[in-house]
Length: 320
Ligand code: AMP
Ligand code: MN
Ligand code: MN
Ligand code: MN
Image 1 (cartoon, protein in one colour):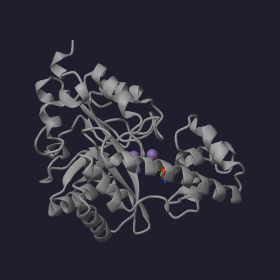
Image 2 (cartoon, rainbow, N blue to C red; image 1 turned 180 degrees about the vertical axis):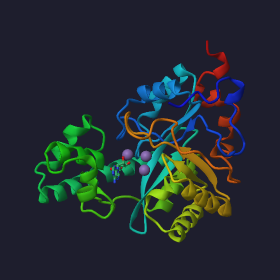
Image 3 (spheres, protein in one colour; image 1 turned 180 degrees about the horizontal axis):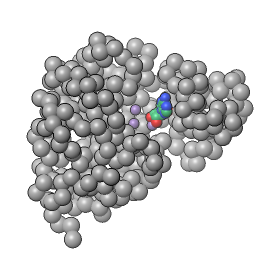
Image 4 (tube, rainbow, N blue to C red; image 1 turned 45 degrees about the horizontal axis):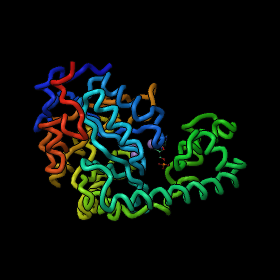
């Protein structure tokens, strides 16, 4: 259980640097029912508040549909909600995720960008369904839709649940290993934009682009560096230094790649559902590093000093 880390109002001002072994009550990568998360935006915010978070970002896959509800809940709960999403993109044939932190909400070219992502996701689901039908899952689209339980655009997790429900595979991990994971038939990427295009939307819309979970793409250190360089050329300025649980040596090595490039460091649990290894705010520790925390970015700095200012959330020191 994560303790409330910054128990009083004064301490809610976020530090300007990462110190070794200090824990942060900040989680800038989480999912709700607006994409493939299990909790409604309200329930997610309530859980975060209960776990003592002072700052959270809602980053559903390719949508900001949950942000309005989350910001109302955050106002109630007195914590700072950063609007955001996690964009599906492509780089060198790999599906790369970019977290968009959008302090001004959904605006500018992101509006059109997310519309494009929505259409891409709908088309992609049809292709995934066709392929899974050929591999033994009849009526795949209907079955995935039933698993989603709402009319939001489908994702691979919905197909994974359908494969399990129909007994095609024993479990969720098997569904990704055999059908949906990287390089498998159901891993359809053709519809996503190039990473540079997606980063462009974020930056032109007042947001900050953060490269999501860079250790999870199976890249060599060198290739990860090339990915960061492409990302930066497009205007990307942050990288998730810590995403969920990571090997400390890998984290320290990643930190060096950030420092070399003067990138900001972000952190998040990538929380999807209760009972999984990730809980809101429960990430591996951030090592001491010269990479500045993402909340020091000029577009997010008002978060640090005035956490209550975001979307009208109540100042922590006014909570009864
Ligand atoms: P999509 O956004 O439709 O491409 O689906 C991606 C989501 O599927 C990720 O955010 C995870 O929630 C889940 N996912 C992707 N790869 C795996 C995997 N190998 N094992 C389990 N879940 C995965
Ligand atoms: Mn997901
Ligand atoms: Mn991701
Ligand atoms: Mn995610």
